[in-house]
Picture 1 (tube, one colour):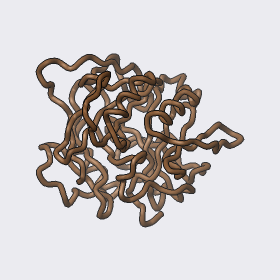
Picture 2 (cartoon, one colour):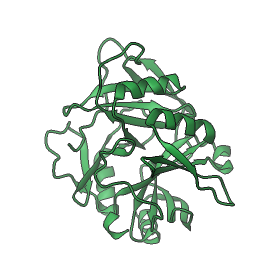
Picture 3 (cartoon, helix red, strand yellow):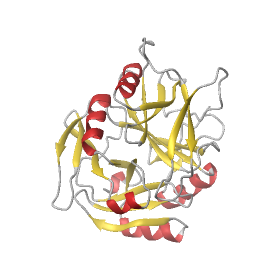
Length: 300
């Protein structure tokens, strides 16, 4: 995994209804699925063009009891997961699941000093995310909505070796593109006050964002922000699946068809904190005047 150090290479959806979540993402993103369960717990692989994209598993009972909500978790490859977890703890982060050998490799589930959660993996046993990140059905962008964007970037630079992207030119002020090696893989910025907790958001590539958003709404999900256009002709939208996990999509917009969800913005209720998200996400129609929006310019 040396060449992949610092790259996002795997993703998991932790949910309260595996069967329903699988149906939703298979229809929205065109994924396939196959079983990869162990004696300890059920586990499904969601695939694109027969290649594994992510894992699907149920939220553990202890997490549900503490108020955890369905969520997407990204795994960053490291050469030494034990050492990386130890350094994170020394730098003010938290280790929720200590380094453990699993069916996908040696992993740890952690939170940065601002409480945004992610996971680490050493020796991933599955094919990692392609370096290009442009394939339909794959994750094409990683975005951290931080409590303090500059402080978060400084932390990840020291911890994982991420750098300011070489193509960080003309980007919206306050939006920090970052790279792992030579590949620009995401952006970090200070979240708006209405989003009460820092978190990582993952953007899935689609070939037609108009059709994808229609499927999201028809299948019981919600479009909570967007679609928003970017300078390179790509459109993005943030969504919530039927169980409550937040994700995003990006792709070309092939016209605006009847029945396409109107542009909306995200609202929040209750408190969210720590590893267990307490509360729920609510939506409201976008006002006639354009609200301030958290935007990002992709690496293209």
